[in-house]
Image (cartoon, rainbow over all chains, first blue to last red; front, top):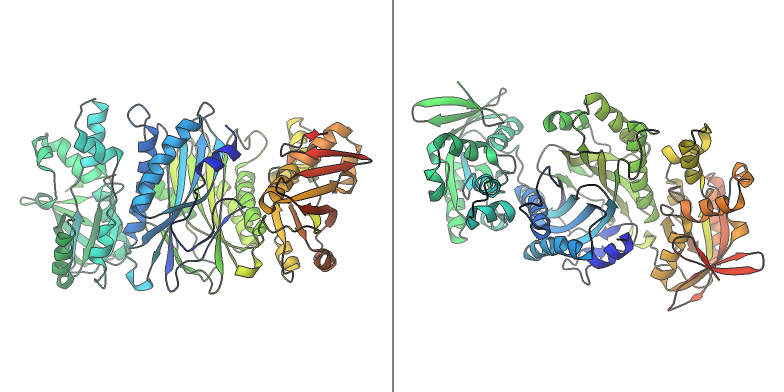
Length: 318
Length: 318
């Protein structure tokens, strides 16, 4: 299909955000970011048979999922989603209906977050490739960086861990359990957390894209702190507790792609955050503490009376 | 190679633009666009064996070229280049040296335009894939849109046409003519045109990425005007005048990828633009006129006493 047709097909008839000055239709888009705000820019790409398979996901799922990954990054920076740009590599046998399905998935999620598609590029490729750059706005003193953890902080996590990884496992085994499979195919980033955490003066935040072991190590390294978490405190769905304990541990510590949030805040503000989350129906749980500042940052996992060192991959070292 | 290694390898040690609040190293970058300016966002992707071949381009050329395509779009919007974000799909057999070469090409051009790499994503893929989103700033009344052509305008073009296409032809035939080959491998977008055109109250502008036939039709359609250009006025390098006339015409009208600029301005401001370009050593030439407003926009090509209708592909219809 021709690029001009494709562009016409996905050009929106209106823009939800008033800060879009010029959308699709020129060499570039023009925006006027909201006054007093900073602009957050994130990027996340997915390639067929690397990040997803069309054997178990349809094109609408794929569209939803890649935008969800970007929205999750925006939220993890504390920013309100605004717009996105998409670069598509489209196999030659795709038709208008395929592109419409992909776009439906993108647009359904974009609508939830009031986001606009403001530009992009399309090209041919062997495998479907989708690269998104997404934009959000944030007040300078409400940025939520991974470098903002302090000694004494409570470490928290939203939702339940390992659900997306378990969903993928079920898909691969062709077992039909809609809840977990949807957690993999159609993750919904926690925009409400922005409102719940808005009053807090300081929140250190990461989204769980690569597994909690990676995210906690990133926080420790960026903030130069040591972190200690309790394995028994990690939130797990009742249904998953029946799984083989080694497999369960792997899912919890390393699977990622849940697009839940992990972060830290002061003990003083933790109660407030817990209450705000409860009001907004966001499951949130304290899972450990930031024990100390450190020039050799590390993450310890406590399980019973055992303490092990948790590396980025989720492997434990004694 | 590991993604964290790759990110460390390409993370700059400093940022040239003071409007970068937070660069690489968190879930996203944070910028504070210059006061009173709007932000222009462009995107352009290149995939191995679709847009380039590593048989005749090295990885540094590839890096240069994909960023040049984006910079060219920024300039065509009238905006000053600021930053870029890159998504890389890297084949599994690439090593650090390969990535460094690619990055050298990007960085050499970024330095010329004072641009910063502020973020991105990397993933594995079969073929090398590079997707760039680039950012520029522009004063609201200095945007150069393709919808800004008016009846009576002079139509102009910078540089010479078809050089990049001729360079690609020489490469495919393994003929060594450095000048044209470099025009294909290492095009240099015309940032100086921003300064030359800065005093003009209105400029309609496109960069020549897809061939002048496409660009002129885009201008006609976006501005709702008819355009007439003279084939004999189109600027051609002396050396290329020796070519077979059919082949030459194809190169001039359709080859594109020169990343020169085509646009229109009022007759009153044309003299001023011509003089400013002369001072800055930018070759610029009047090639025709915007003849009238039109609800059925078209582009006519005059050659001797023949007038033909020029479509987007560069085909002529009588």
